[in-house]
Amino acid sequence: MKHISEMERPSTPHKYHQKNQSALNYIKAAAKKLAGVFSTLAFLTRPTKTASKGAPATPDGSRNYGQPPGISCSNNKRSSRFKYSDSYGSSNAASGQLVTENFSIEEINKATQNFSQANKIGEGGFGTVYKGRLGNGSLVAIKRAKKNMYDKRLSQEFKNEILTLSRIEHLNLVKLLGYLEHKDERIIIIEYIGNGTLREHLDGTQGLEIAERLDIAIDVAHAVAYLHMYTDTPIIHRDIKASNILITEKLRAKVADFGFARLAAEDPGATHISTQIKGTAGYLDPEYLRTYQLTEKSDVYSFGVLLVEMVTGRHPIESKRPLSERVTTRWAMERLKEGDAVLAMDPKLRRNPASNQAVERVLKLARQCLAPLRQSRPSMRKCAEVLWGIRKDFREKAFSYSPCPSSHRSDNFLNKDARKNRHHAFGLEDCDNYKFVSA
Ligand SMILES: Nc1ncnc2c1ncn2[C@@H]1O[C@H](COP(=O)(O)OP(=O)(O)OP(=O)(O)O)[C@@H](O)[C@H]1O
Image 1: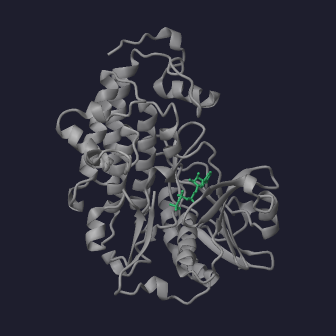
Image 2: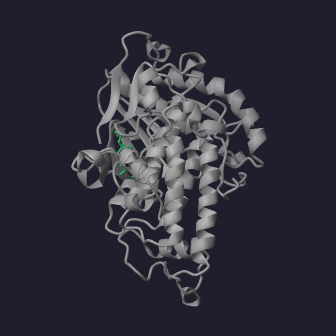
Image 3: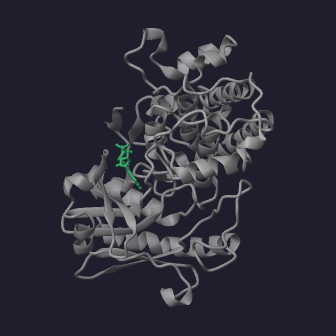
């Protein structure tokens, strides 16, 4: 899928781009500014001082909420690096605060075996992604920026990603573990999510069950709603798409790639007028394209495209199909309008009244998300609520009598744990006790 990253608008120079500051100074200033904000936020949202424990759960049971509240920077001869401490003052890890690992270029070279091809796991607009094993044995994903010191766009993207990731923590968002700026290297170390992207799962021979897709859609809705609502200033992801959704071993979702995130505070004023159109073809909000006005509702639009993708299994743009089917959202919405939502359903999904109905309801939600005018689109929070309802009804309908989900097929992606989890998700501890009432 083509990436649209630089369609420069001739006027309105971006304040953010004009800053002639080193990355370190910039980050220091931002950290200072943020410390106060996070300290209030931490009191409101966190019962304990520990970053990963004791955070309140969302209605869906996921852990949540914003930290790390304090960011401090240090620059030594090993690397430029971040430390994160909480809002309670000191930066002493021993006092129960979160401090990210400090990484040196030597450690990263070692972890990736000098960025060997064998460790390469992906490539995006920002650069190359490697899998790495740290000295303590843990696996990490290492994003290495393209080496172009004079490319302001990449530099800006790098800072955006760092700043955004450093401010947030949510179960359904990839976690930033560290950062390294060394000579012409800019590297981000993030948690490694080893079960592929949502797009890869949809493309896989077995795909995903409808219940799994609903769970994933809810995870994404939670993550994006969190970005929009729970942080001090709304964060617009700007690049919600299936290849940016990483799938865990338990088939839950983590939203990745904040390189394009634009923080309202860093945007010139509250107008959200953007100087560049960013995002990925097929997912872009037409109103944003028309007006250059970026709001949270642009993410909602992209989420609508994602929902269609998830239930049809198709890519947003299917260039090899007949003209009438090339734009998947248009094609699927036509089927919905004609009362034939089931015809748009991914052939890999099994048909029964419960899944047919769930697909139809997801497409109806997608239709709202894809509304041409942003005011008509629901919030991400609303999307999550609607999806909960769909999932609840689906479970009630389909799984009071249900087959053993793993019995009808093998699945390339599913390991034993994932299958076990799938049973838990459906409330099926012992498949033999259940019978499937076929559609
Ligand atoms: N945290 C991670 N854990 C495991 N794999 C990852 C991780 N982050 C990225 N990847 C892999 O690397 C690939 C490239 O990721 P990246 O975010 O750089 O680019 P992209 O999202 O595919 O493209 P673009 O950045 O241009 O939108 C992903 O598709 C995924 O396969």
